[in-house]
Length: 567
Image (tube, helix red, strand yellow):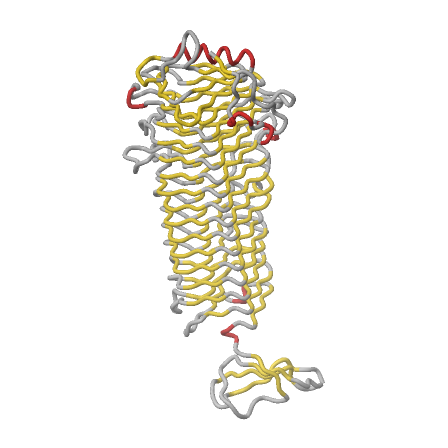
């Protein structure tokens, strides 16, 4: 039943990955040895033989070794610490059975599964089966954590969920789940009445998923499968929950049914949520979708190509919990989104302390490139939006301070940049953006307390009564418009709703349509000049003028003094 030979695979220390956990070693139990040996022939029911081997290994915290083969089982149980592994060619396949393939439960366990293939065999199960391939219910404490670690495993043909992992809602809970270099492939797409997922994690667990592959291996023909579903509802104490999803690849995932699920779909109340460096291809619903009241959420460096008829990235706060500090959405690439490229709906301006949408690229979407609604203070900067059907950058019903700067917006629908807050106390800065070919307005701003529009370049607006380079109104405080260029001929590069007199403190100067600025000792008498050109007096004196302005284009045109200096 066992061998004392420890393969090189087992020489590694778990502590290299999980701090302060013991070295796996001791007795190794071979499931194909002993009086009641498993066959692994793909035909024989090996359930009893394998369970007996697991029971022996659990007595010592030992190792269960699976030689090459296909092991047919109904259901296995682990309730003590154990390590299961193969050299890479062993499959545990479920026979027709109404129940989970592997159940793991207990307090303070350390369970490590390495180099094994688990086959849920969904085509042999009941069409309504909601089996889990692995069902985990762990309980831990700060000095006795529960740890599950899956490495280099393959999960095939799941019924409902490949791995269902539950934490503990107690504030003392310490449950850790680690998945690395695993593959989740094929599986049942279910019916509209239930929603299959590859990984489901609920209730206050800390989990890390890195370098895994999720692939339905075909274009979904029914409702699809969600890749990762998260609900870390640790309402007692969020500090025991964290979410890390890094460097995974997802193909043909997402759930397009009555209860649509994203590829990564989360409802987290945790200390931190990190979704970084993942790749999504041919998703049938939002690749990154969720609600969170994590203290900090970072969505960064992800690549999205296709999102069905939904946004590429879609995030908003959970409806319970306290105000959270930061939403950071940086350096993502979103292509071919069926809805908005990136959506953040804060639900209420008090829910998010600070929002950063920085350095993202949105290339082709059926809605707005970047859509922010009901947020507090926000920075939307250094993004590139191209070919958005609706608006380039859209901020609405939000309160606080907004910095929309250094973005490039090209070939959009009606508006390049649109801000309409509909609340009081908003300060907006729209600066140094490049906007090309919107069909109506380059920049639109409405209902803000103070507004600065500075250094923007707008190209490709056909200036007419309905198409304007910059338009704003309902500014209750100061408005400054300076250093902007609208690179078209026409009469309306700038329009102020109700006229400039409706703005209490209005400054407009140095824009391309305000004319050029020169210095001299008198109004020009030679040369060709345009309306709006100014010559500032290089030697101002009492009784003179601060400068002269051209009021009629010509050679030298008509000039009038402005800014009389008291004698």
